[in-house]
Length: 591
Ligand SMILES: Nc1ncnc2c1ncn2[C@@H]1O[C@H](COP(=O)(O)OP(=O)(O)O)[C@@H](O)[C@H]1O
Ligand SMILES: [Mg+2]
Image (cartoon, rainbow, N blue to C red; front, side, top):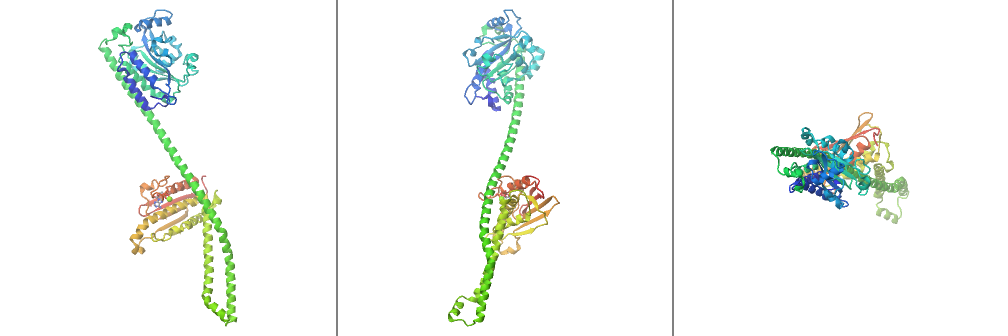
């Protein structure tokens, strides 16, 4: 079963193969063409509705009047107004038919098409479909009426076009609009055929209930050649099923001479060669189309992945940002409260201590009970420690304030738009957030951060997004360092002082008045070339499941390149660390 609306290269080959062999078991061209027509009628199916796609399929062949059966001669004469034609007059002979109505299933029952005399070119021109068909097939009506043997070989080899009317309704080429096209809901009409060595033309006409797309038509060309292969063996021999009805067939049942055989073989070879050519052409154009589709699909997939990553990222970032900003806000108030009162605490404590001291001076021998209390409270130590405590409380709250400030500056929720920003502030706040990951543990040594900040101007950018880039790159550097140095740490515990310490070096620099560059380098495991080339691909990660997502660098790339019109790349010598170079325009180029 084939659906003409989705006819594929595979269908073309399968259907062609089947058609080519339909002549094998036939005894005459009529029988072969009946098999062919039946096959097409039954196997072309609209997959959606399950109905046959053809309303009517017909096999026509041009045939000399003198070679027609007596019955057909009489019929043709009738159409000519009983005028007796020349034996050589070409007629369009209906050899096989299949269709929805009972009477469409026998050529003998056809009223108007049994054998149409093609008296001359004008007569053909009066049958629009036939003349158009002849033209489409690459012939001119003169050739059909009077085949010129000298032209035939050449024509026979180049004639395999397809007659195609995509929209039959209202088409001037399709007759019987009221009695046929409209009531039977004919959508497309397709015809294909060829020229036989004798100079006769054969044509298969399909009236279809489905709209056949233009790109399918090309795939139908080889079918004509396959059909020609199926009927070629009967050429010049047995045309009609009932032998005795044909005057000429009797003498034609055996091949007249070797020349005929030679001609037929020649024609077979030529047809097969054409078939090969056409099939190859179809294969090439179909695989081109496939490649195009593949490229398009790949592009769409890339786009989809990018969008997905962006969605995930935006979603994550906005909730993380909100969370961070929320916490920062919540902490900020009580910390300010404490911090603001610490000054008074310090003052009051000092005042109280002064008071105690004054008491001690003026009353060096207090009552027994007070002396015991002083002793119990270890007053001298208490005085000393109280000052220290208040001081460390001040330092602690100052630190909390700083962290809160960093959190706010990192999330920069309030600053979604473009702003002029001190990049160093962004890097510092990111480092502050990551600080806990850089401290020494029993597994890893502490990571040393070396800042080499240059004199750079304020940068016009999306601050929270750039901070995200610093965060991604620094977090990767920490991963790489811990990965690299954990083995070092366990193996060289005794000799720590001689081994290189894990370092992250951050350098900023002005390139010119338009650009600045930020280098973030680590002396971790480094990146192999095959990893380096895929670094910025969405979802590419070398980290174990649960640890890596592979979106950090791809999102960083989007932020730097697409949002800021900058550049980001990575330089690395495996085993010796990696360096990320980010170039950012001073004034935003994009976004
Ligand atoms: N500084 C670095 N040193 C070594 N490899 C790195 C470094 N930065 C990134 N990579 C490699 O790039 C990959 C992709 O990084 P990223 O996009 O951030 O995803 P993830 O960190 O989730 O794996 C990492 O899995 C790692 O293999
Ligand atoms: Mg990462």
